[in-house]
Length: 150
Image 1 (cartoon, rainbow, N blue to C red):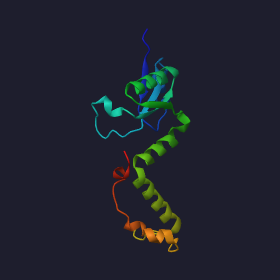
Image 2 (cartoon, rainbow, N blue to C red):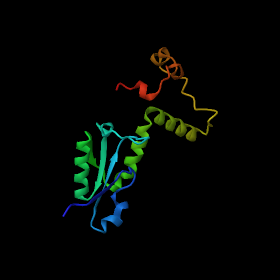
Image 3 (cartoon, rainbow, N blue to C red):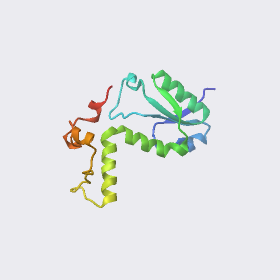
Image 4 (cartoon, helix red, strand yellow):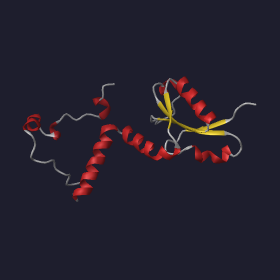
């Protein structure tokens, strides 16, 4: 008899969402690529180097590991109870530096009572080495992806 396995790719959800299939004897699990696919990607080579978060029954995790390896990726188990924080971290990382900076600005505004029209100001008391470099607003602005090394 051939093993039956069902994998889903939602990052925030564990294998438990496939419980109705598990009740029929199908091994269930997760196979979440830590990469955005904004459109259908017909070339499996696009997944090379990708990390895949696995969870679920042993047969499902085994299939997930084999699939990740066949695609040239890496995998590890991220248990269901850790999926929410894993997905939050993945979402923040997906936006890179811009997401982190925007979140920091929102938190600073929320904590200081300022509005979007009145962003929080950096302290005027900077060290001499910081003054020599200029203000953060004078830095060259470029997309986060362009700033990376690879």
